[in-house]
Image (cartoon, rainbow, N blue to C red):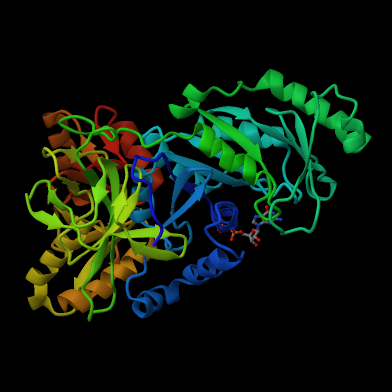
Length: 528
Ligand code: GDP
């Protein structure tokens, strides 16, 4: 077991957000290699590939028992502990992915240099924006033909409404790639050694763009282009400003290649230098500061074992304050239940180990039998409730149809339970008796059906519903009442009794929103 320091060590708790295939897995692997957490390349990849095959997912869960190892990866580098939280971005995209982003202090956004910002990047970014999570941008695959650096940077600025500050500049791309120029340090990093090997870039310092050495390090044409580009970039983009970054208003942009290990060291250094230490967490009645001596944390994810023989679940808790010690009793705020945490799990790359202690910013896994729910706050101090763990507008809505109509009561209980756990959202329409479940990803539906069958012995089918998206609606009482009366067929209540408007598609949604400007249509609903 690794010995851990006893004073409060500093943490960087972050996630990588990206669209499938941008290079998240490759980058994760390189970061872990840098941190010495894994020895051989390829391990993360193999697991990533397995996870991608969705049909295998449940089988894997069943074989492995509780599959949690990939959810958090911890590595250390130069005295700093990095906690990298996985946000699955493939077909197993779900609300978990979104909620995981409430447990990080910063994010790295990976963009494919040939594709720019893609749909999933944008969605995940929007979630980060809700909480002003600071973002470092990594434009990946410069070793391949890509779009112009200006075009890529402008796209980030325009589409995400962020200030951008390039930190390095690619010297050519694809076949013409000659290296990276650090705008910060003015050095040139050129490819050397074999491709795919760990970083051994050949770095040469220069005194700046005017340095004649540049012309010997790279081709004359590349040097001329670099000088021109860097000058334009210097004039056109904001200088890096740490406060603006920490507020989520500015993103530093690094170009690189995860595959060829280019720019990865600078990225990790940027995380170490700029990314925030554990931040205070919004809570009622007052925010929880990481300096607070009481132990406080919140559950952002619950992973259930699909094997009916083992009803164990692991609740993932983000520690927000205090020093956690194994065996501690924590109170579940709300129920007041005391929970003794005897075998907390700490994650270290592929392995997990029992955590003797943990600090703010750390994630620990707490095995339990369903007592712990997504959104729960646990503390050994005064009762406080961490807020800001949102529900997200579902992107798929399905009718739940019972095969055996006498099981209505069981179904209701199951749907309420699973909604509380954060597996699905449930909506009870004003008109018609059939309940609707909403999810953001297909995988959630599969988990739903499997758990209904295995745990609740309810045989149900999911059928298409006329709707594809939903928004929570709020506004002045009479306006709301009129709206509900006029749109009854598309109105439901969620499990907290809040009114929801269901729409066929985004076009219908904008149409209705446009005509009811005095109402608020929210894509997220914060848990109270
Ligand atoms: P993910 O879906 O975001 O996890 O992406 P992966 O890391 O699995 O990468 C998708 C594909 O892009 C794989 O074939 C990688 O080998 C490739 N790839 C990742 N990074 C780079 C890079 O820097 N350069 C090149 N040429 N290919 C890359």
